[in-house]
Image (cartoon, rainbow over all chains, first blue to last red; front, side):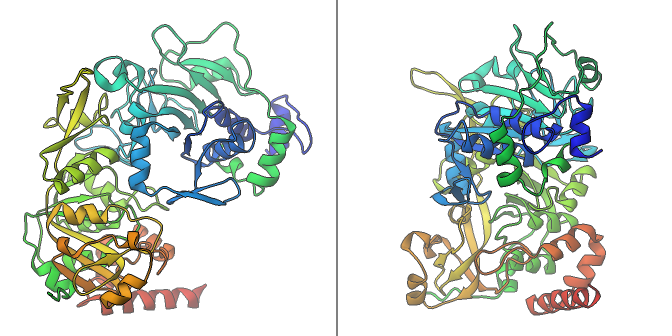
Length: 258
Length: 286
C-alpha cells in the first residue's frame, strides 16, 4: 500500500500534499518529545526521531541544539555553530543540558530498556550494541524512546539487561536524582508513565490503530484509560517542512511499516 | 632528544601476552589498525583489551587474542553490530567488563590522574552493576550524602593510538573534528605507541594547525610509527574517509578467508597491495 492509500485506510486525510502517513504521525509524536525542552541538546537515535528533533527545532522548539552526528553542533540547515566531540558530549550528558530519544531492543512496563544483548548476559543468544551510554543518559537527562516495530519481543515483562534505567530502579538508591523518562513512541501509539506506580500507559493511538491491536502487541499489562485520544495531526506547515525540506526522499516510510 | 621512531612490528614486539592494552579511536573511527594488524602478525595473545570498540576489537576477537574485553560497545558505525565481537560474545570466547561510555571515560581519567577510582552517577540503577559485581559505590562525604559509582582506574600496560601527524619525538596532532580519547589512553598507559598518517619535522608539526590540536605530548609516548593509511578501513578525517566498501567486505567475509587474503603478508605494504587489488577487481566487475 502506498502512503496515501494507507492513510486513507486509516480514515485520515490532511492538508496540502495528501494524506498523512503513519510515519509522519510518528515523526510528529517524536517532535513533541522536545516541546518545551529549552536550550538543550536534542539527541535523537534513529531516523524518525532525528526528523522529529529537526522538525521541533524548525517550529515550536527553536532553541534546541543539534549535532551533525559527528563532532559539530549545527543548525537545521547544517550551519556550524559549535564543537561537541565525544569527550564534551559525555560531559554535557553529566551536566544534564540534553534530552535524548533512544531506541530499545526491549522495554518493560517501568521503562527499563535493553540494547545490550538478548538472553543470559554471560553468554547471550544475541549480542546487540552493548550498554553504550544508556545508563548515563537515563540517570542524567530526560529520555524518551522510539520503537519502530511495536511487538511482544520489544515490549516485554522483563528486559534481559537493564541498560536504560526505569522508574522502579530509579526509585531506590542514587539513580533517581536527575532521572526523568519522557514518552515512548512506537509505530502504534504514544505511551507515558502517568500512573500511580509509574508503569506504562497508553497515551494516544496513531489514527488507524485500535486498543486491542496495541494490547495484543504488548507483552505486559498496559494501563489503558477509558478514553484514549488519537495522536495529533501534523499542521500543514509541519507536513510541508517534513516532506519538502527535511525528508524529500521519503526515507521515513522505510523505517515505519505500512 | 630521543628519536622514538620504530616500525609497527618493533612496537608490537614490546608487548607481551597477558598485558592490558588500550586502543584509541572510537567505533570505526581513527583506529590504530596498522598497529592492530602488526599485533595480529605477532604471537601476542591472552590480552585484556580496553576500547571504545570497533574492528580493532572484532579482529582481535576473531583471531582469539582477547582474554577479557573492557568496553561499552563494539560497532562499525555504518554497520551497527561488529560481527566478530558478536560471534565471540555468543560463543563465550572471552570475559567481558561491560561499562557505560561515561564510566569508561572516568576509568581512563582516574588512571591518567593516578587515582584509584573516580565517582560517577552513570551505572546507578542499571545492570552494569549486576554484571560487574566487583564494582563498588561510594557515599559523598558532604551534606548531600549521594551514592555514586566508584569506577576503578583503567590503568593500561600499553596504549595504541593513531593520529594524522606526529614528529619523531612523539608529539602528535589530530586534524579531524574529534580528538576522541587518544591523549587519555596515552596518559593512562605505562607505554604508548603512536602511529601517524605522516611523520613530520617538529617545526612543520607546529605549523599544521592551531596549538590546541597538538593532542599527544611526547612525555606520554614510547614509540612513533609512520603508517600512511594506518587507520584503514576506519575513518581518519581529513586524510581519508572510512572505506565503506571494504568494511562491508570485512563484515560479510568469514574471518579465515578475510585474514588469509588481507592479513597474511609481511606488513603494511602487502596489506595495502591486497586492498588495492580487491578494489581493482571490484571496479572491473561493476
